[in-house]
Image (cartoon, rainbow, N blue to C red):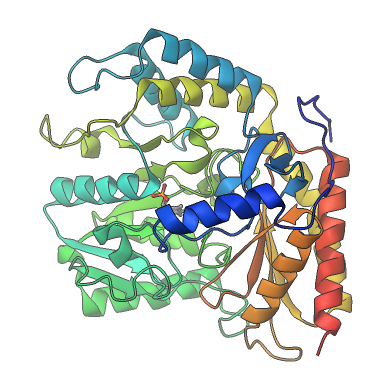
Length: 449
Ligand SMILES: *Cc1c(COP(=O)(O)O)cnc(C)c1O
């Protein structure tokens, strides 16, 4: 793995107990000013971040294995992105594309048409968040088909707005007591190889979902299938090979819009530009956000021109959608990803990390499953000898790793999955150190009664 040069020293170094005094003081201010409903994984406050490290306000340097939830794939302060942001901000920060359009928006739409799967004619519309992108993809699908029902899957995560909460599967913390939810959402079984009956193929898992769709909804009512090609918050669930393709084929045959939510899997994260490519699937619409703009808030729906252009002028948009500073960041980010060949970097990360996790699984019976693609990797923790989830263990391991200077995230319907989403520009040595600390944390916590 090529080690790029970075502004900050790429090392793990703790200089205070955690949280340090400055973070502790900020936490007290926060409690008095910030709503309790916003959680934070780490008790430390960020001061600086670059490449694979994040430095807190007390000078502690952490290895970042989370990328702010799969966002800072090019690092949190890539000089090309920072320069593009500064340059655009010095010209104009906003006009509203719906009032006075600008080239940056058009350029991002061109880049998305070029980069996303499929050689067909495409159009894009830009937004601010992943939830907004998913919600608008559903709007497009309903209008273009004249149908209302939408299928989502077990373990799905699509956001926190009313419609995307309805699409999301998990009760706590995303949905509990926030209802009533948007109607006409139907949940179908996902392909989850670790928890499905052994040997269930992707085609069989797709058939299981399709027969329920046909029985419970009826094809004539179904506007869209919304699916993450690899589920993110739900537990980094990689469906069995053929599952996505079978669903997409069935959708195409019945005039159902196949929407890939690539908000987390997109932009080089899984070793391809988009995770659908691993399965040879070309979605009708694709929802994008997170890694798209090097940390600036930007999201998009890109898809078949005939579907996108079915919407009347004025039917899509938003005050800030496709903000010019965010667009400048996205174009710089996409250029960096291409020049550094970050899909290849993601594959290198998989080759470096996955065997270590598999080895760890052979000696640690609490690891029930090791899975993922590219730089989207996870271990699912269970009670030894069973598939019973061990969420408290996942929490303990993440806390122990953090106390040693390594930031990881947990996820999963059962909260028992530790996920790794390192910046794609992380150096090989730093990554090895981070995974080593995680492995030690896992061994140590697994031994505890
Ligand atoms: C994060 C995420 C979303 C929501 O994105 P926001 O920008 O937080 O609204 C939607 N879908 C998937 C798959 C995600 O990972």
